[in-house]
Image (tube, rainbow, N blue to C red; front, side, top):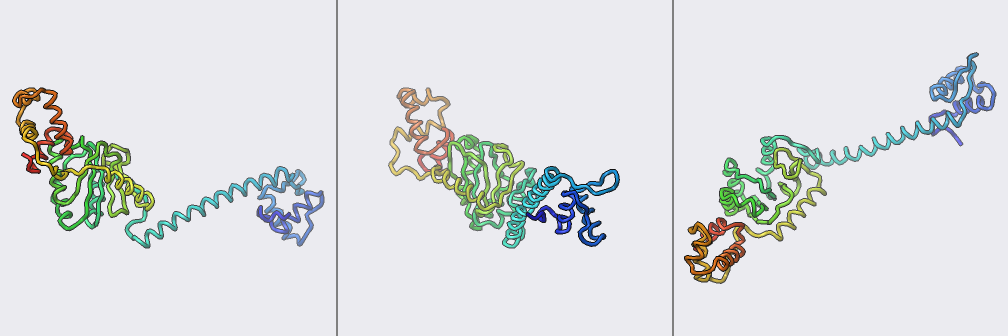
Length: 309
């Protein structure tokens, strides 16, 4: 078999085989033989003895070493070639969307995160968001939100019931909801995310740590998976302002609703209605369920907004 795959020329191999068999390197003209010997020495297949005569290194040592070296070089080359696929994807991404090349980018700093999200949301047709329990009203951004909603952007937001225990956040969410950012409630919102036009997603670098540091993801498969997750959660979530129950409230239920916002204690409300504390609390639980409210304060607010009281 030829040793050309290991980097030897035909003359190199002839000279090496001659030396290995105990002969002399005399094939070809002296200059060519000398050059072949230099290459064989560089490949560590030939050494010079004390008298300056070339001696072939045993194949088990020299050829084995050369094979391992070539395998390592080949593996490195394969990795370099494989890396070219990523370059191909980036070039395609640059051609399709010149301003978006990196498929995952880390962005640190709340201001930088806001700037990057809004740079896309300002021209978006659809924005999907999932907020954590730590969400706070962004009153400073409210005019921008309302402007985009007025321009027709489709905005949907998933929030946890627990987060709306904050009445300021509840009123803020209702304002956005009525302006067109449709909110739905879940018991556990799960992974925070912002998805813009189903093509770019922002998620916290550390889950649950908010948007001080995020990963901006534009890899199509990853974004599609997050959109699918959002849609699954959305399908089972409850509207922030559910439609009023078609059945007219009973007089006792209407009394309970009034007392939710006026009585300081359940015992006082139950005594005023002339019913047991247990019965009163059962009425309250039923009303919370019908309103889709997370707490009594929210129930009273939603009941007023829907004209129940």
